[in-house]
Image 1 (cartoon, rainbow, N blue to C red):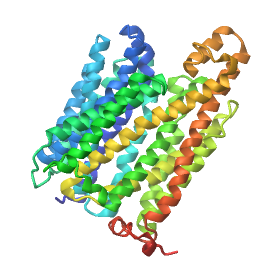
Image 2: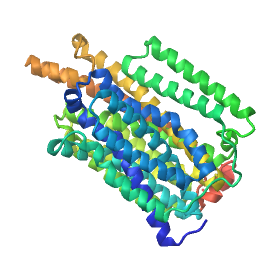
Image 3: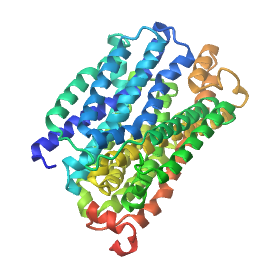
Image 4: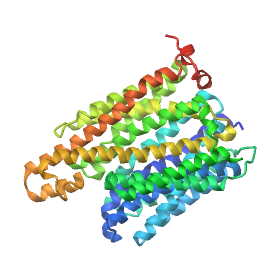
Length: 507
């Protein structure tokens, strides 16, 4: 379905606003947790569930949400999700107990689970030209990524000037504007085949993603020796295995596994997942570094992440200008190289490093993400028929969500292991629990040597984790060189040529 140029880009703006809201909501809660602990009398378990409930619902519902959009209309389901997101935000803002807030966060995650894949799925409808679609994808990705560092900035300001519920209340006007714009500007689209739903597949996928996500969240919190986490993870893997077997047998599967036979979708998904690892490594560790080592508050930590936004903007602008000239391969490769360099420089950080050094390497990392992520996702989505855009987009987003959860657990365990090792004789409770507890205990002791050792141990753990992220990106570079085309290839040509990369290289 074609729309005029102005309406298409205005519609993209509405979708970008919706994704900005989701990005903000992922991080804005972090600055409110100390206040919530007092106002809602929330213990540590409740504080963890304020975040985990959202993540679990997001991971569990994403695949069924994409299928619903394909069948009943992506615009219709997207509008319903936007309205639900606004209502759930109001419920969060005015919750009077921990249980109410957790329940509202679950509903918020369900709404976001539909918003993410379906806002992405309408891009092929709005932008049938592959070059315009890649530019639109870069705007879509950037809007989400910018929301992540803006969350602590906005949340810190709101907490300082209003009450904790305001960090959720800001979603409402943004959702209203987004919903009105989507209703007026985004065309309806659906799979013309009107495939029946797959309730067994939906239940198995939800159980599998729930088990996988919660298992890794618990591993990241309790360590790799936790028996309950292992049992939940095993149950999740078993459910996902049963899901894959069922998808092979079902007449109308929730996910068409043949999507992975398309080389563009397959390799686009692979590089998107690998880049996600590097991205979550940065978001997981840098705010803690700013607060525990450089001594900033939550608002100051968010402000110091602004170079990341600058890098993202520069990267996406370069992507827009160079994609049709160079093709997907060189851009993804250069983005991965930039990511590896940025993360590698980050891994050389010391407790005494000045702020300008961290600003430099996070800006480079942002530029790498801005170059590589939109192209990787565009290669994947460009290889889908419009009828299957909802299913494919949901699968890609579910893989990103799973990758992000696994990344936080794996990288968090690496960081915590090195941190506790480098504490030496200070590896005792409460210092060993986290760097935040360690810094508080060190300051309470009044011994500057203890504080210095705790901070140095944390930076050692952060550096080890960033080395892992840099290595993942570096290993992906030769793969990108081999499987993605060079030269003046459009994305449509890229998806055809990717199976025979040797024939597309122009030297």
